Length: 422
Image (cartoon, rainbow, N blue to C red; front, side, top):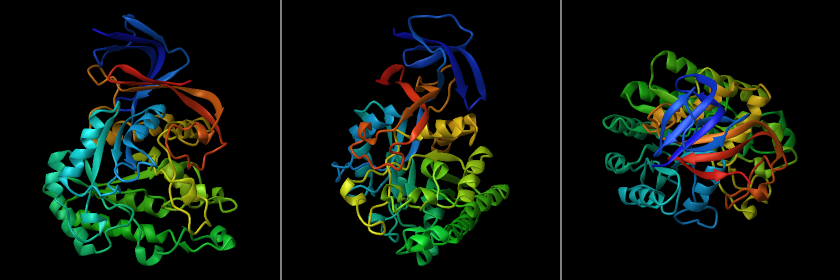
């Protein structure tokens, strides 16, 4: 019988609103006591540190199968634990595409051998072609927690309607990219004075809002569950806010990159800041932050997207989109909180209990009887990010050389210490 007591630590549980200094007692992988409770077993000193539920990252691209040179599930799990993430959802853009139950089963079996919980997002359409419906029911029974459109949206409204109506019979969550291809195809930047000065082909933010409005209307029509995947504009935040007031079953995600960066971070064609959706204006970033705080935006994701240096070190319009983020989702959030840009409890809610509830997962809570999946961090430790020290196989991050405030010290999974900072 293994017992661990973490003493004198700040306990932050977004599910209950608990925020106090106390002890946490862990026994046989479960939390058995919290707060003013006697010390038992092995002791970990938590003085001047903070404990929150292990993070849940609902949007992770892994290279396995097919592109293991960029990332394997094993290397992604190591990166996740270094970032305080104890559960991940793997996106369907692998080689081959995760579009049938055998591939769902393959990923889940690989995940069983790893020190984190690995969940699967199945493809909405065969080969992500946007046309041919997959067996959503069978993949759901096999364990898929949501169904995604991949990098391209479901463009045909009739197909999207059928997908949502069919998925509603299983209460399955449908994720679509809110982008209108006719307005965005062939572009690489947000339409603004900045992109005009840089001479980059750009798309207006309204491209996102148009598709978001269409999909929310279809969710209202069919009764389906909709996740707007990676919203990035102030206009879309307001559209989601209005839809929620009408009790449409819509949720929204945002990447940590879009909460911390804006279009000025492109600088002089910095391709490591080339993302999809593109970085937008400061007013959009501020609207996203407020959307997280008031619950309009449900979850924050890393949008972990490993790319090789060769695919990034190209002219801006030709470079690959994406950034790694598993190790950085919490540190960047802590920096935002330290700078008073976001409430820390609101941030933690969006990376713990909110994705757990949205996806029907265990965890995301600090309560008696809950799994002992915890992250212990310093809120104030200053450090400078060196991308070469990241545990991900790929190093593509726009935060390289940035000054950070707050750092993961330990990650605990099922009551075991599975990561400690060097």
